[in-house]
Length: 252
Ligand code: PGA
Image (cartoon, rainbow, N blue to C red; front, side):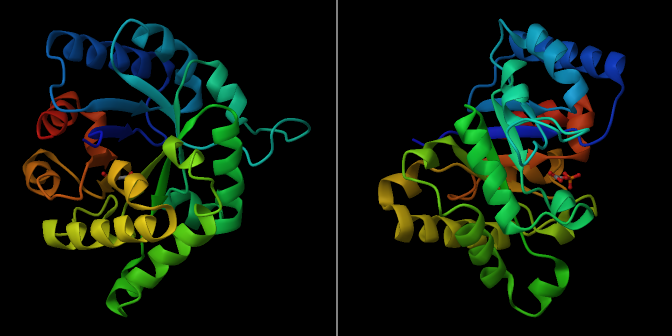
């Protein structure tokens, strides 16, 4: 059986006090109502990681960052390395999010480098891919996703692939209120799984969690998650509200 996962991506929201208070309340909720069907990850800004790791220590919720540097250490003012993230107690890092690709010009090569650094630092990677609207409208979405996988991810060894969770996030659905239909999500998730099978074999493909992201909310989560190749979600806006986030976890 594949792992089912709901991961919250807070993006650049919440100051230190608000964030730690929110982590505390989510932790408390899931201690009282353990998620039955899968695991929960909170991906917070860097400033929350060390404090959040202490709060989450005894519980079942995992912690992640949203980005890491493309170098291991040294004179890179303002950067945070994968190993620094790992040293806080965090276990995951999101790499290749569309906001990093588009606002910070991160290309497949850079994303590949970050992914390898993260894995070598002991972090699991939530590896994000997805097409923009114009690419879907011109029927290039499969081509784009294939390129993102081939150039960003498929240099990994089969062992390294055990450290990967894939998140398919159609860029036109992120933060827009538009969601891929459950059938559109399933179609792409199956395509992704088939590519992994071609490259790494069917065991790896069967084990790989593939999450959907993009305006996932309590009202649509259950239907999207019910698709056979959708193994959970990467949640942005709705991860900032306890009732919405916990309801999405319960939709697994
Ligand atoms: P959204 O964001 O749920 O707000 O659309 C998802 C994401 O960017 O990971």
